[in-house]
Structure formats: C-alpha cells, structure tokens
Image (tube, rainbow, N blue to C red; front, side, top):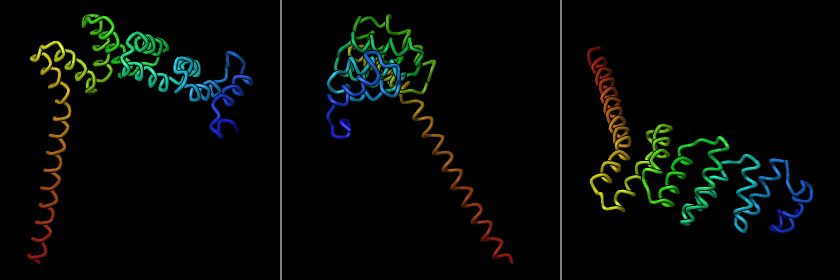
Length: 185
C-alpha cells in the first residue's frame, strides 16, 4: 500500500522486513531496486543484479556512463558481463568506459571487437570508435568508422528501394496484362 501511495521509504522498509537484509526473492529485489533507483542507485544496481534483472542493471550502468562516472560505469558493466549477460550494448559500455578511464584504445579495442562479433550491424559500435578518432583529430580514421556505421543502413535502404521498384513494376505489369486481356476479349 505504501508503494501505491508513493511512500518509498515505507515501501522499502516493508519489502526489507519481509525478505530480510539479504532478500532471496527475485521479485522483492526487483521491486526494491525500482524504489531505490533514483535516490540510491548503487543499492538499486546491486538489487537488480541479485534479482537477475540485468536489463535494469544495464540502464544504471548506462546512466553512470552518461554522467561521466567512468570507474563506476566500468565496474557495473563488467559485473553484468561476468554474470553472463552478454549483449552488444554491454560490450560497448565496457569499451567506452575502458577508453574513457584509461585513454588507451588498445585497452578498449577487444571489447569493441566483441561487440562487432556479436552484432556487426549495431551502429553504435562504429559511431563510438568514430567519435574517439574525431576527438583525437584523426579524421581519416573517424570517417572510416562513420562510413562503417552507415553502410548497413544504406545497403538496407538500397535493397528496400529495389524491392519497391520491383514490386511497383510487377503491379504495373499485372495491371497492363489484365487490361490487355479485357481489350482482346
């Protein structure tokens, strides 16, 4: 009831009292994580990890990355990865946090390579690398990575265009042939 009334403190206290200090109930951990997300993100992250809700944990890792808290983001993304939650955005999060934390592309590149292996069409991998090179005034390399980012999009658009062209031509051919049949009858 406290949760419905918006009383986060009472709701959190209630969930903690029924589950103990170290709740084993995944649902309780997930609910507690939701309650703590805005005020206590570190606790919320741990609760999401305990609950196995790695998507919500990844959201908190991304928030750390976006807030330029590189060590925190790196630690969170690695924890998610080590828990066996392998997803392209997790690998890129580790790569970006590593890159910002160390400033060394060679430390981050294995994570970028993993992301590309997981999904070679995930444009954020290429954009992130392009941004790195642009930031370091290596515009030729930045352009290469940016081109790699847009190529799958251009290829897909081209295929859709060809498909649409063929579809239109087929419809016109059918329409013309039907008209011709009517005329010949």
